[in-house]
Amino acid sequence: MSLDRVARERLVRALACSVIEHADELTSLDQAIGDGDHGLNMKRGFEAVLAALPGLADKSLPDMLKAIGMTLVMKVGGASGPLVGTFFMELGKSLPEQPSRSDLVAATDKAIEAVKARGRSEAGQKTLLDVLVPVHAILAGGGDAKAIAAEAVQAADRTTPMLAIRGRASFLGERSIGHMDPGSRSASLLIGAAVEILEFEVNP
Amino acid sequence: MSNVGIVIVSHSPKIAEGAADMVRQMVGEAVPLAWTGGDVDGGLGTNVAGILEAIETAWSPAGVAILVDLGGAETNSEMAVEMLPEDRRARVLVCNAPVVEGAVIAATESSGGSSLAAVKRSAEEFYA
Image (cartoon, rainbow over all chains, first blue to last red; front, side, top):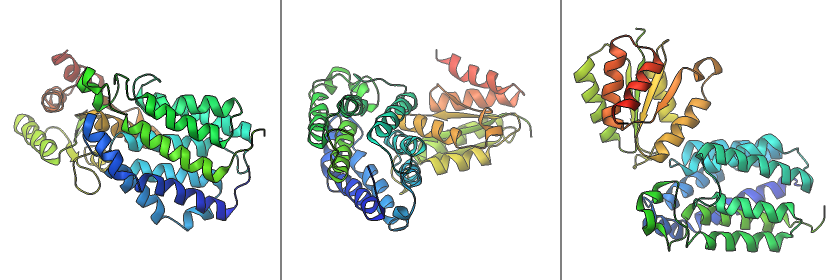
């Protein structure tokens, strides 16, 4: 996978726009089972990321990912800031400048472990991990861009019947059942945007 | 001053400031104290930069105890602690206690010259 400067800028714009364009949807999901700020918080964070272009894309891929993560940590404001920010920062720490597919599998695995540690959470608790973990399995198993994007959407859908165990939605107990987890939805949007740009090959 | 510092982190600046007022009434100037609340736009939420600044303001060689309200305040506080210089990181602890009551109890414990571990324990045990 080779990402030149133009591709890096396209990637950043696609990631940011995927969240910004769906901010209202994320907010209404969060109003149902959280504190209703997820769309606004993520929009603020990714607007700050967009504002760092074009300089952001001048950086190497690892440095660019670390910078995106740090911006999200500093700007998002809710628990999502440290969680999503940690994911990007950890990817930046683990990926080489020209990553192979197996580099990406390994780096994503590390980033997911970092998100688990940050949130003291595991998959199955109605959080973004319920998208990250199954999507990682598809990525590690050799799935193409289409399969990865499809799993991201389906995994977010599968959070709807789940009982929230972590995060603000857990306060609602069983009333959290029947609503999609907003953090899973934003993770799914970001993954969908990323694979569209990266256009994975079936085999490395 | 070598008493343990107290940092109050709430989603609401009003709650953080009000809790800090209650701490001051209890312990006066004997304890380094700072509060922070709100996201970077001033809405309800918490932000890492604000928490780092509060830790700096309440810094004491004896360490700093952070009292938080809901999830994001805790996650952002833990993130802020990790971003501290290494020599300070181990001397800042996030307490698992109610923000208002915990802050008052922690400050009272600190004002008697207790260690950071004892301050954290008092805040956490009171409602355990």
